Length: 267
Length: 270
Image (cartoon, rainbow over all chains, first blue to last red; front, side):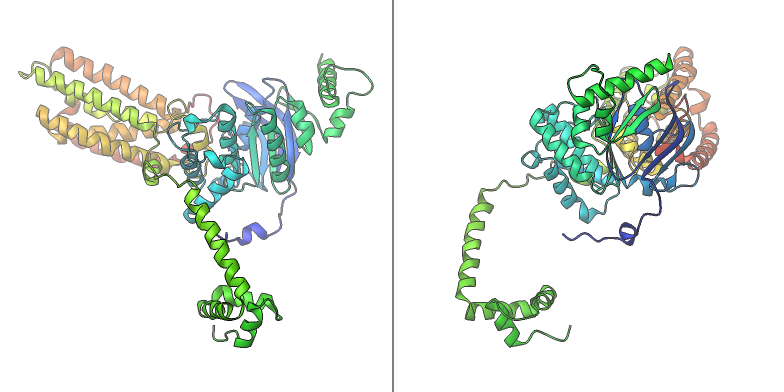
């Protein structure tokens, strides 16, 4: 079916950055997990790196508009979150794969993604086609009508990616999407990321530095809720300098060198 | 559209020649009459095309038979839209609790203590209400609260399902135990709405827990010990319950944004 393109989609963007955070502070429980973060991101694939507890998930949840910032400002698609904003309209343009992807075990994958598409307020007539397209893109066409509980861990992850992209979001947030994918699927996933990154702002949190080096156009490194590095993957590799740091690849050595320098500065 | 493609142009198009192909095709897409004329022209003038179409049709027919069919849906889509599948086990549990209360009522037919069905009725929907909108009891809750549909509307939709299941069950149990529905219906609605309103402040699961505990400690236990129907469930209290429902409904709507899931309060638990 031919999708109707609305004028809102074709008009030029009147904002500088898709995601812009200024002095952002977000609480996770009692702890201030994101603590004074300044970050600007445009269309492309942004790899979010950082040690455990650095605030990656909290940052992603606040961009997904699940958590309200405690201080600072967060501007998404030109809309500053706060008082009188169009939260529903904004959420229609966001795709989100949580770190703990919860799903209904007894639903088939198609039923589940259709349900998510309904939650995202997609027009009823567009839902079946969009669901099929999302399932095809993650390579699960032959499993579309299997129940979620019969899928393997990697397939569940891919189903999670499919539900995130079903509404063709402007902002796509993937929290550790590569966990549980086998090497072959990770390669396919990187190809999908590159394709999505051409017209979407994709933020991928991961622990795998090599995924970032291979598929991302931009690397964001955070620690203790603050930005400590942002640049292209080549910058990350170059950050190691001529010192032989820890790590097996140039990107991993760069990551550990930046973290070490940051810790020395803090100490 | 009044202007159709001329016969000469159609003949040219059907044999693969002619000019302004895109204009012919743009017209064909919208005009059933010209498509019919085209098929007649193709049949007459281009046996190669006819043969190709027949070949493709035969090949496709084979593919279609071999390809898997869409299995029939087990549940119609709208059922899921009204209640998440994980609500049903909690509603089943509520039914079991009501059945147990009814059983005790029927055993104690001499009415030494007040009817348990009557005492439990006001808080009966709370289990289902808690399960309708909380992170621990709905596995996909993180996705639900991040969606544009999250909000009071969706919460009320799910609560309605809970009430549509629980209230008829209560009515049946009450009828068997000889309890009039008038005695518990308003308190039941007040507790449901109260849980939603309190849930806007401290989270629905916690709110339902607080209210159920308060009712158990403050009303059920004393009336079991004193073997008297509590004043709160006497007909004289009904106007107060009605007033309470109205006040709560206003508070609920006034703070409806709380259910969009956009919270940062320390005490708010989803």
